[in-house]
Image 1 (cartoon, rainbow, N blue to C red):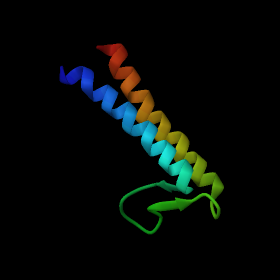
Image 2 (spheres, one colour):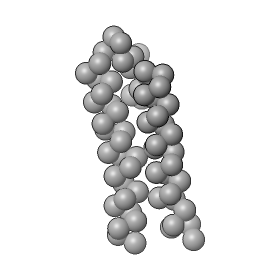
Image 3 (cartoon, rainbow, N blue to C red):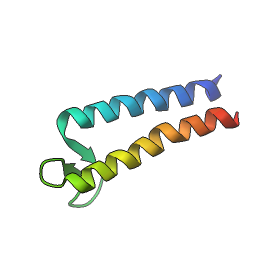
Image 4 (cartoon, helix red, strand yellow):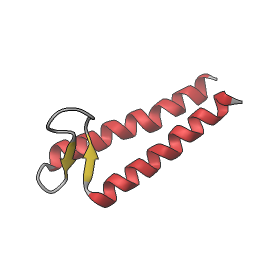
Length: 69
C-alpha cells in the first residue's frame, strides 16, 4: 500500500510547491547558504532553472517509480 501512496503524495506536493513558488515569485534553491531563496524579479534565469529542476525531480521521479512498480 505504501508503494502506491508515496508517488501520489510526491506528485501532489510537487504541484503545490510549484504553484506556490509561481505565485510568490520565490524558488527554494537550498536550505543552507546565502542563496537559499531565488527571487524571480532579481534573478529570472536561476529562478526558472530551479523551477525546471524541481519539476523534473518532484514529478519525474514519482512517474518513474510508478512505471517501475
